Length: 265
Image (cartoon, rainbow, N blue to C red; front, side):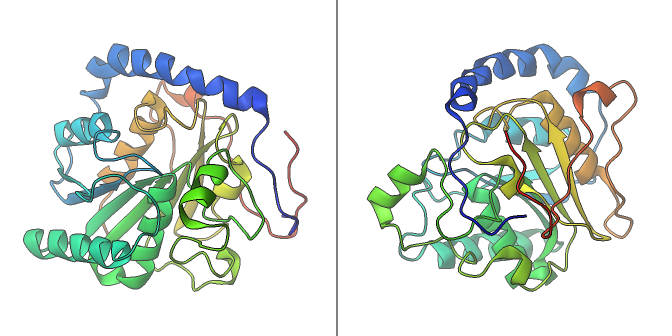
């Protein structure tokens, strides 16, 4: 991808964030089907909210996953205002506490900025993390890149404060040692979708869905993909394949390629 800074998504995509209301309705309509997907192995799952959000925003996702048979935990740290003092330490304590409590590795799910946190924790504590799943998380942001939330972030922290782990470009960082799934939407109105992509690798993948950034936590396609990823055996990770009858929900995904030109939208 180009090293030039990218701007926030086009205004037409920001206007499409109202699709989140339709995604709520779709979630409610699809609930009977979603409950039939299968049963999990009761391993723990820790869910991180996006910027300015708290555990209330991830309640539908956590409700769904509990119904699938997992021990699901919110992050329990109030509103996510970004890298405030002690936040990194508190998140580490939260992960390690859940890991000790259950005695097995924890799957991490992060929405937007929460996914950046989740990836950083997976890098620091691979012995405690089973896999990491991000929902519209721009973990490939570089200095100068902008999102629709950048102005608020800058007012709170200043333009020079970056989330933990983003001081160095993602492609120059140590490779994740756990399976990583990046779920994104090309019509994301908050962050540029190509900054949310995983690179090629044996334990890495990107999954494309149709919808808004604000609706990723309850978009039925996202829930189907997350459930499929969590249902895998820990020692038998495989790339995502849409379950029978759901192929139309998942366009062919893109993959991060450092030498490619930034896509136009």
